[in-house]
Length: 114
Image (cartoon, rainbow, N blue to C red; front, side):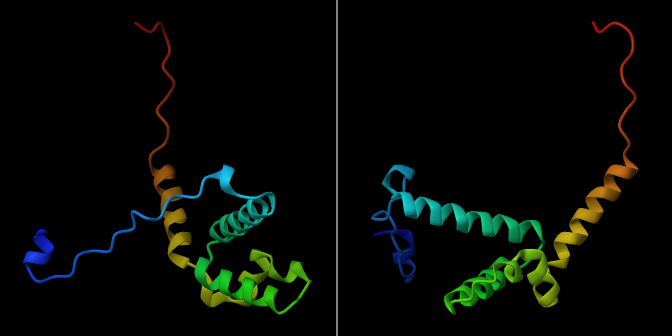
């Protein structure tokens, strides 16, 4: 009996029957769709947006049959949905820049290196 079952807890689910999808198992169209989805997600992350909210908005919008993709670009979507901006990411980036300004690079080493 596992320790979790001995304490009266339910055993964690086993996902051993699931295997990772290998690129060779994808059809050409599936690979293109996956690449497009990953491109959208990367662009959303770069624009400091909430990935879940943006994907729901963009995919829901696309399923309605709209074809004006320019309106769904992350920087345009960001202007229309300010509540989805992850401000903590902007703060982290600002703090990193400030930290780099406080700690300048050391002067280059001159002379022979032993």
